[in-house]
Image 1 (cartoon, rainbow, N blue to C red):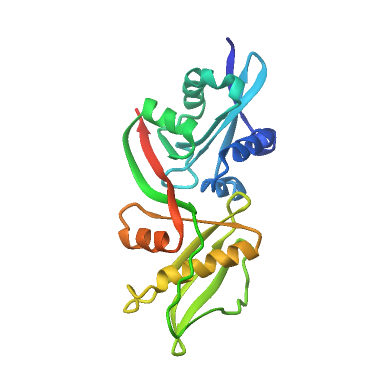
Image 2 (cartoon, rainbow, N blue to C red; image 1 turned 90 degrees about the vertical axis):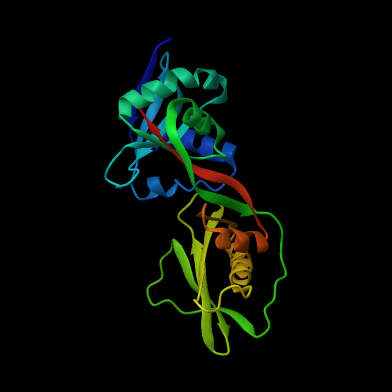
Length: 244
């Protein structure tokens, strides 16, 4: 069996990436690495056939290329993953793996080849529709002077004419997903405002033809509770490990 891992342009592996994203069917948080040219991509050849690809980015600094974050092999060749992964590692020189636990192939490689594995964030997906209300609170959107097509922001909650929470949607992930972010003014927390603005941002995502998703630091119990209350559910974790 002749295995080759060669560096290629993103366009050369785009058909394979389309298959990966279709098969995954979840928000892939590393997708923006390709959008902003933060990644290098590699094509896998087995006996001259294109069977998959990998991608690497900088774990701490974007200009580095030390972490494998994408590893896809076509199903008929997936049994060769343990032959291909070491070849990718040798070709790119990565010393880390980063992945989402709901991306099962690369997660298997993480647990087989990496050490010092830890979870850094919790991933959330849509679960059910909520009907939360906080009396006297108005949801709205401020006008942006310089709008960003990837950041649909400036949504707010107001109470008694005062802005008490804000948030928005990041659209620089794979279609059809939108990543929700929000913050509540200090002194106004634990009043249900966080879950309320997440609920309203979910509605805005659907109006844009997007599916809402979110994430938070694994130690941020307040954010986790907020997202769960707004009808999202945990669907995975962001995992990291070192390659010796």
